[in-house]
Image (cartoon, rainbow, N blue to C red; front, side):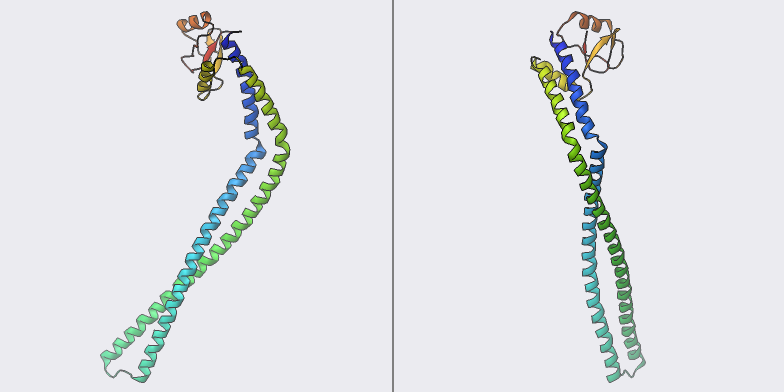
Length: 236
């Protein structure tokens, strides 16, 4: 048996093993597991971001609370000063009232910001609770799917491994350079080896030039590639 014929027989079993592995990867159960896993990780990331935002809000609220206390103390001090030593001149009264007005405006601004921060904190709490609930659901669903997957997969993996062993057996005796060439082409297109059928490449159904046909028909182990798809062509 020539090398290309041996390679063809290897390809038949190799593609079967690949198809079984692909069935495992494309299993609806596995895809659902991976989707739940990715969503769970995304929700964990979102919850961490919310925690960081809440920490910033808490720090800001504490700072505003301290600032409010200082403003209220300042306002009380102004009122006490007014009662103890009321200004007699109009300009002094105006200056005092302006100082009081500025202090009150500052207090109102802080109170409005505190209200906004409280609303934002409540929104984050609601969002955090929703994310935690969804994350718990995703985790539970993932664990249930994984239990099913772990139960079903051993038989499928065993079948794939058995088929791969058959392919490996067929690879025995094939020239290492030829096998390396096969694998290089396989990275670009599958299957990497095609037959000559009615003057055409069976992989892409392109008619081959007469010079290429002559090489395929008259060479036993020479590697001849389709000029259209790049597959190795074998005459069988």
